[in-house]
Amino acid sequence: MRETRGKIVTLEELKNILLVFRGAHPAECARVVLSNGCFDLLHVGHVRYLEGARAEGDLLITAVNADASVGNLKGPGRPVLEEMARAQLVAALRCVDYVVIFSEANVERLLAELRPEVHAKGTDYTAETVPERDTAARLGIRVAIVGDAKEHSTRGLLAEIRKEQHA
Image: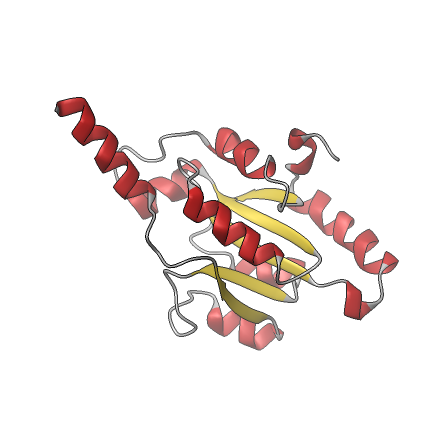
């Protein structure tokens, strides 16, 4: 088992890892899955999403939003945890093979550069609302909606914590 920090790689390192992985496995046994998210305060919904993503293939890459993009997506006061802490928490999960931090608004560039067989999104999306759906379709990447029903959120968890602090 690789040390958790060893699972956090740059995009260039990841491209080399994928060359070796795909070269060592027949095409039908080398299904790479790309998942992504902010993962600000890891919760059970994140774990179920990532386990569902891993079930879609043989190698799971999880792209974690950089701090600036989390702030743009989630608003003031976010992220709660800085990007390397979030990346390390995600990397500690057994189902995740590699973690890469990205700063773009979505993972279209990662899809184009990594060419996974599957792009996994959580159940807060539908096939029609996945931001990268057109890019995935153009590249022949299957989109899979995975995880449990969207009953967990960092926003809700933070609201509960704040409520308790003010009670």
